[in-house]
Image 1 (spheres, rainbow, N blue to C red):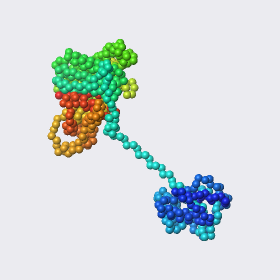
Image 2: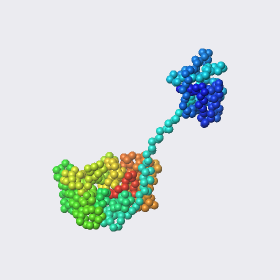
Image 3: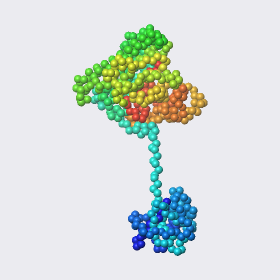
Image 4: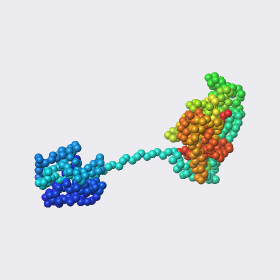
Length: 549
């Protein structure tokens, strides 16, 4: 609502009024100020500048006692107070709806609005005789309203590729100092074939260890006896300087014990018993006994870690390295152990025991998507969130604890996976992620798929197949390493994981697109473990694979 400016007392200089831009509005005695405002506004309208009359920051003089005389009944009726639309042309004021002046230079003069009921009355001299109505003080033109800035747009989340593309080049490579005792190797691989299948295994020093020039902490072991296979993976606790020693001792002892024990136990009759119906008491009794052997292997592994500790407890070199005497907890690590036994027409019997994090899983590549994966373990949690159980913990190897950690499966799965948490955490949740892991292994030429002729539909579907994604190698930032990622294949082809599982042609095409891969599949595994990039992933990586024919 427009408010009139109070008229100063007689003898008091009128406060200066200025137009927007600093131009003064002259006051002339006896003149019609409203008319002058309109004329000035018309000039500004022709210049394209809206009018905004403001007062200087000077205190308003108190209004005189006299009031405005009543209007002449013969004069045109004044606008009523309130928000209703005026009957005549509006004053040339800026309005929220428009920035154009509302009155052209030739428009007739509009009636002056009366003050609102709650506005203070302003006194002044009577209107000159020629005025159509009593002169009122010029209405105060409100300053241009402050328009609040628009709310900021929410930040757009960065994609994984954007983040990893930036961070992949920030890692540096430092070798482990040569004077370190019991130094862990940068890489280890194993490729071995036997009656029980094909073993592919590799371990790589994680990015964080490379960046800091420290030892890796993982280890793996595998062995055959006839058509039986034994595997173990251990992840030494990263916060313990001697955990790599414990991990190595645990894996070597667990696999060594399993091979020795089953060499004395295995007979053709036992194999026939394992092929019986699971409800048969003889089969159940044999499975329970063999599960006890696997649990004993874990107990022996714990004893081997203790032995490794005792061998170094009195060595001054280790005391100098640690700044104190070694303790058993300095050798802490996890342990995942598995024994795979033939079970005649029933397939294979797999017995596993897991202490700590990581994962053991069976994959049936010939089964439908929803039936292809079976988890053979569960990551142990420690006393606090984010903490894991270790083999050096006394409660981890009690008979009751080992029984709860033991799993038995019999069937026709053809791939067994044992991995440290450096791999398992990148494929969480495991119920769906581990099939994606299998697809990544196939897409990068590690687990090869049979090559088949493409149909017309397949050719059309894979026309826009993604090129491998390249990141710099941590060991040498000038080397770019191209790899395939199942997620990108799904995005580019529009396939779901289930559709990709049912038709793995895309995985075959991806592997064929990679050049200069090592001939040895275990070396391909090492190459992939060392170079695939996942957001927030920098730990040691170890993966042992058994492909059962």
